[in-house]
Length: 109
Ligand code: HEC
Image 1: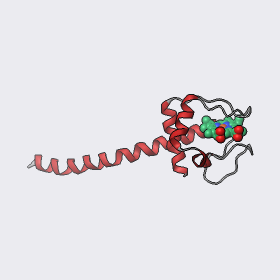
Image 2 (image 1 turned 90 degrees about the vertical axis):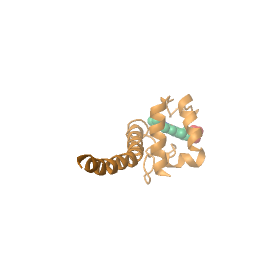
Image 3 (image 1 turned 60 degrees about the vertical axis):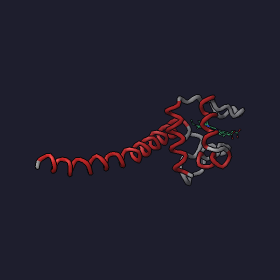
Image 4 (image 1 turned 180 degrees about the vertical axis):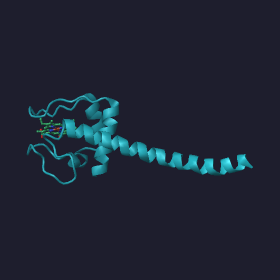
C-alpha cells in the first residue's frame, strides 16, 4: 500500500524534475552569460535587445549573429578575438564562459 502510494507520487515528481532540469540549466547559462557580458563587454557594446552601444563603433552584441554564425563566434572567442581595433581589448574565454555567453547571445536573436 505504502509502496504503491510512494511510487505514485514519486514517479511524477521525478519526471517533472527531469523535464525541468534542461530548461533550468539553459536559463542559468544565459544568465551567467549576461552577467559576464555586463561585466566585460557592456562598457563598449550594447548587451541588451534595444540600447545603443556606449562606444559608438562597437556593434551591439545582439547584431553579432548577423555577422557571424554563433558557432563561429565560439571559435573566435576560444582563440581570442582580435578585432585589429585598438579600442577592443583581446579576450580569451574559457569553454564555460563561451557556453554562457553564447547562450545569452541566443536569447537576443
Ligand atoms: C573597450 C571597448 C570594448 C570592450 C570592453 C569590448 N569590445 Fe568588442 N568591440 C569593440 C569595438 C570598438 C569593436 C569594433 C571593432 C571593429 O569594427 O574593428 C568591437 C567588435 C567586437 C566584435 C566584432 C568583431 C568583428 O570583427 O566584427 C565582437 C564579436 C566583439 N566585439 C565581442 C566582444 C565581447 C564578447 C566583449 C566582452 C567579452 C567585448 N567585445 C568587449 C570594443 C569593445
